Amino acid sequence: MTVVAALLVLVSVLLAGNLALSAGIIRRLRAGAADGGRPDQRLPALGSTIDLGRDGAPWPEAAGQLTRDVAVAALVMPGCPGCDRLHHELDDAGGLPVPLYVIGDPTFGEENDAYLASWAGASTLVAPVPSDRMASFDRPDSFPTVVLLEDGVVRAAGYRLSDVTPAMKSLLGRTAHRAGV
Image (tube, rainbow, N blue to C red; front, side, top):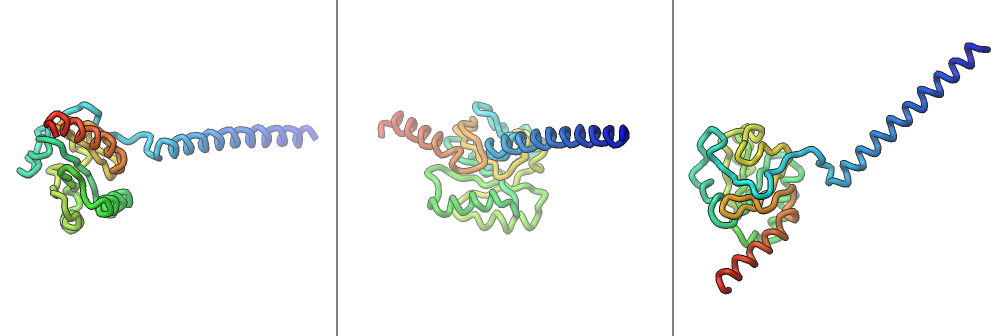
């Protein structure tokens, strides 16, 4: 009888531990979902300067326009559901009021070329290094990564167009006001 009681206590303790761990996992998953499901991913820091020279390999000449005036850079990859949503979002919006640069990861080769060609109305580039070595954009690890730039300085960053749209409207309003429009 003592052995049965000891086993019952042991099973009860193990069950309580299992429930506590399960509750902790569920709480952590819910916290991740509340943060857009991306609690640990990196984005370029607001106010930081995009320095294309930090990547250790030359960017295509057209990339120089990223660091002049106002532009949106979208780092994408083939097969990325979020990238496809961004693509549809841009198509539905009929474009942006600022230049859009869609940047692909070179590790995708020919698949990347065909994918980038589908982005009508955007300037497309293939980065000189894979995204995990792209120091200029703080080594993005989630896609798409959408960045609003003003003269190469990060003004907004996120994973959807809606993450940068308010800052873009504000920035364009300030620019128009300074120009006397």
